[in-house]
Image 1: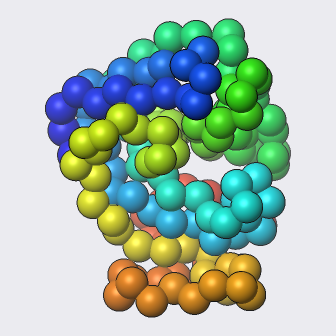
Image 2 (image 1 turned 90 degrees about the horizontal axis):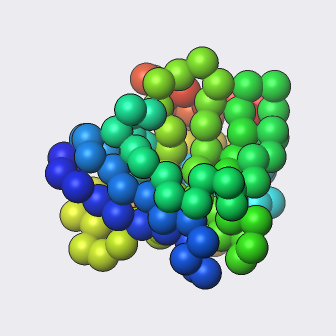
Length: 139
C-alpha cells in the first residue's frame, strides 16, 4: 500500500506519517503479542526512512527479546510499533493508522501459540510459527 498514511496513539502525544509502501496486515498470535495486547498483533510495516514520528520522545521502548523491541506511548499505553534490530523496517500496529487505512489483510503467524478462547476462521493463510520472508524473534 503506497501513499501517505498518518496515525498515532490514543491520547495524541505520538503521531506519525508514513510516505512509502506499507506491507499487508500480518496477524501475530505469539505469546508475547497476546500478553501485550490482550489478543494478537495486527501490524503492517514501512521502511525506517519512510516514517516520521512526531512525539518520538513520548514513545517507551521495551526490549522483549535480544533483538526485538516494542514501542508504546508512555502516557496512554497505546501499542504502536515493533522493531527487529538490524533491519530497515518498523512494524506499525494497524489499529493506530488513521482511517481510511486502505490496508489489506495478509496472513496469520504463530497460530500454534494462539489463545484457546478464540478461533481463526477468516480464510487467510495460517502459519504454525512464522512465515517465509517475515522477520520475527519471539522464540
